[in-house]
Length: 361
Image (cartoon, rainbow, N blue to C red; front, side, top):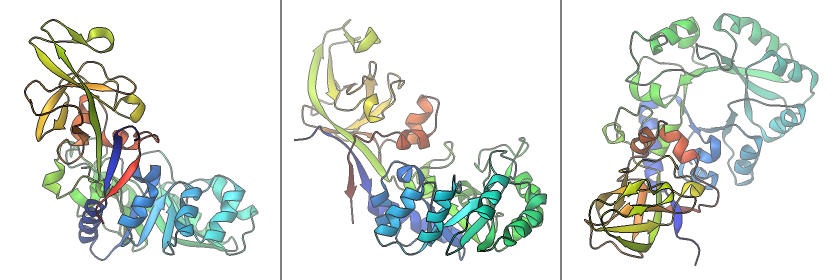
């Protein structure tokens, strides 16, 4: 028997989230973002769950090759574009679409002959100042690209720095200012601007295509807005098993550094998950864990392969019981807030040694 820790990927929930994004997208093209191993959920699972998307968006040519080899014949978009001439050739061979965000990529297109041509989207910088050309450069950049044999410009794409519902209207860069930066480009039918946050919170964002990312996996893109309020369902349950129970007297401690000390006689369960599996070492005492239909507190420092929980008040919990570290009952955004990060980081950080097991159809 293998070590009892796994990430259960709920295919039905992923499909539910995709259907919700489809309704919000209305008649626009819906890209399902599957970068970072589908936000830690696994490419195979994403391919199954998102079969009704209009296209898949990722970063790696190897991901695109994986999808093509498994029969995906629809659109695939590379969100960071290409990195060298060899990739550009393969992009053409696989029939991919690619973002162009910098002049050096235009130069590479100009000097790399490709048999089947390349379909590109011009990346625009609407204020994040990460990748992309300034909106006022779009016309010249498009003309430069269209002058290259085999290059077809499909439109433009941008990414919002701040699309959360809780972002202050008078902040440095709310959505309305990001739209203003785009000018008339924001209304183009060939523009792709809305991410998960814009889809959920900003109906004013238009364009002919949308990119659904973290919401597909059941996480609210705004940690201050509960996923249930948005109608999202958890795509992943990280679960492990109790393999030992320690009986502590008052005054005895748990784990490295003896961080947590029992204030009463306590039953402490040892669970087969640790920071080597992707559960943060920095998680504090009291973080919620779900066992036997109840929340119980984490106690003591998380170690590489194990963590401990206080099951004193859950007498039915014992060796062999499965516990949920996050999932339906424990929102990963809630845990992330306890360690000063976002849910995206936790789901993407689940270690490769943790098996991804499909649940549902």
